[in-house]
Length: 359
Image (tube, rainbow, N blue to C red; front, side, top):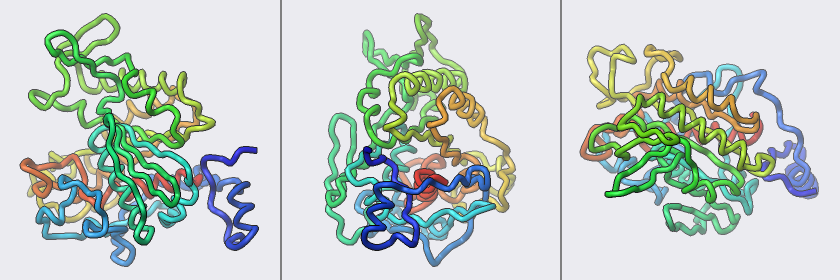
């Protein structure tokens, strides 16, 4: 009987000796908390005793764009919030345990710059969990990989802003092909855990836009409603998953839409303009601006895929974190799209960890 790729936590009675081996090779059935507790519904709790899980000084991977403290941000409470579900407790994130469970495995994030944000968060969380960890960092052909050598665990990031293809045609015309996945699919399909995301780049216009023309079958469009194009691309991705990925081997997650905070009217603050100088989450557990318009698209398209694909439904909980962005402490422009590290993406990865354990 092959060892499963996803191993469930051993019970307290099986901490030592043979009991540990039995629980690793033949893990107990995970608790089915889906019917008892929605881990994505809850509130942010200030927890100065356990957070942050790492610091910019202890993690060598944080890029300057997300290193808000070293970029001069004067407050640091945004690093000390823990996500608390309403009806249960999340398991504590134990990075060493994570590495042991995924020994010899490959975990890949696929998506845009927010996906990169989450990838950096996880490798920082794992790096901080092991004293003087031995690792190799390499980037090759658009694929960034950190391998923790003592466990032979590789955590990878494949940059693909739209999940579908962008090809360069005549006269260097950039063609966004809504019905094609070919450029990256071969790299993604055989890993043990896949975490997909896309949204941010669909909203870009003008010089920030990554394409010159959008193509669907034989039709070409200079532009398209972002939600319409997004839905068509996710439909293509869903078909690719159904036809290509062996879900008995590969665990698949789709990260819900990561919200921005460029407009303070959505959190009902007349004294603010955007996320700049925001130092506290939105009070309460409901976002005044209501559901994100892309959430319904994600849920619809995930409904086309087998039940073995899991939604990391981080949108609503992240909407509450207007304080978590780099704002003026990330680069030349106000950034209310990405997230400071340590910060909100750490909670996403705690939810990923809980989902991998069967919560």
